Length: 102
Image (cartoon, rainbow, N blue to C red; front, side, top):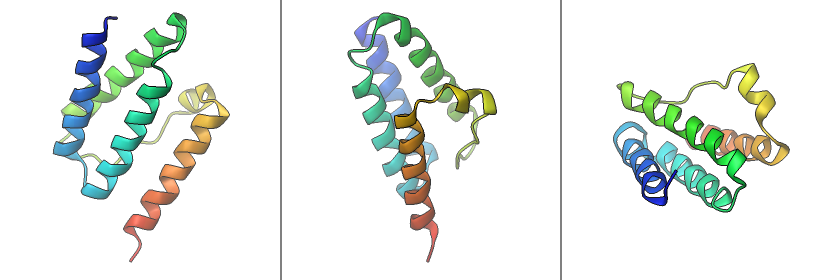
C-alpha cells in the first residue's frame, strides 16, 4: 500500500475520532493511533498488510456507528497481541476509567 493511502487511512481515523468520541476518549484514541502507526512505519512488509487491514476494519466499524465508546476485543484478536500491545491497551483502559470516575 502506498504512503498516500496509509496517510488517508490515518487521517480518516482521526477525523472519525473527532466526530464520534468524547473528548477524553478522543485524546486516548488519537494517541494510540499515532503511536501504532509510528511503530509500524518501518515494519516488515509481511506485517503491514494485516496491520492496515485491521485499522481499515476499525475505520469502517467506527464510521457505521452513531456513537462509539469502544468494543471488546474477541478472544482471537487478544491472542494476536504481543506483550507491548497488551500493556498499552491496559494503560488506555486504566486512563479511560480514571477519566470517567468523579
